Picture 1 (cartoon, one colour):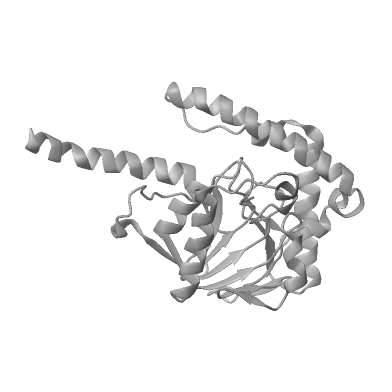
Picture 2 (cartoon, one colour):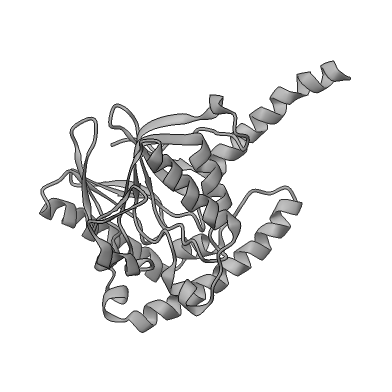
Length: 281
């Protein structure tokens, strides 16, 4: 099974740091919420290019926008960047999730070159086939207890705000980003059990569709696991972890952890400037 790896990119628009992939998979951006790390995603999109991009649900948070409008320029910039990539030739398929379910009535249509689909079957360069799906239909809370899902969404928003306060202090002290909600998921037994069952269920769905694996989002937990020969891949999110999945030209899948990648290249960029500054002095 492919190993999860991380590399580096830059905060500057230097094209020498642009990485090209066959396919990118992105989910759970939650544009329209204060927790969305739209600025980080915009930088990611500036430095990662792909022939095909899958938007695997919850890109826009219709739930939150219904209760109060929040749409800063950075969120609009992400939308415009995706539309520009479509105009430049990238094929973009948008598979709505539960938070952007208002788009589900538009399956089969195109918006600015972005195609809306219920699910997709992706064939990788190595011949392996993957079912691409958001995954909320396998979440019993979302399907059968919508009120509880809304309640959990509210608690999640509170956790994200606490995370923002914690990370403001951490940045001032020189520490890296840390997610309170992600930590809680790993520590709470019921959450760990839910994630495990979700992964097994999605792997079973891949088996039912007679494919080699499944690529999904929904639970904000990036992962790449093997279940008896079926590969489960979760893209993670752009609220807590800032992760995406990339397919290389040979079909190898990789989880990109942008927070780590951007930090490493920023350090390299800073070191590269040191000799110039000395020469200038």
